[in-house]
Image 1: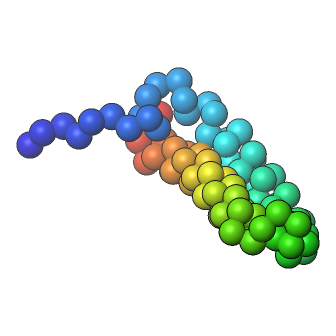
Image 2: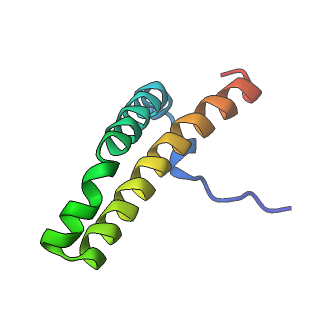
Image 3: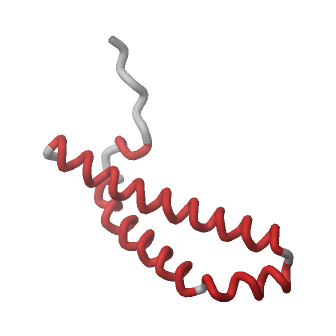
Length: 81
């Protein structure tokens, strides 16, 4: 059996950033939710494709940040480190 390569979340020293990543991810999701009613106006001003693509990209990055933090904390809970 071969060892799997280390993922960035497996690197020592990144675990203390997990709660910060969760808090930041939640804050960014709340910020996105408060701006949902402005999306149609921005789409009219700047083009629907650009605005909705940017919004999806923003949500993807925010979700990944939140997921990394949660995954890191769960992994630490399982291993006991």
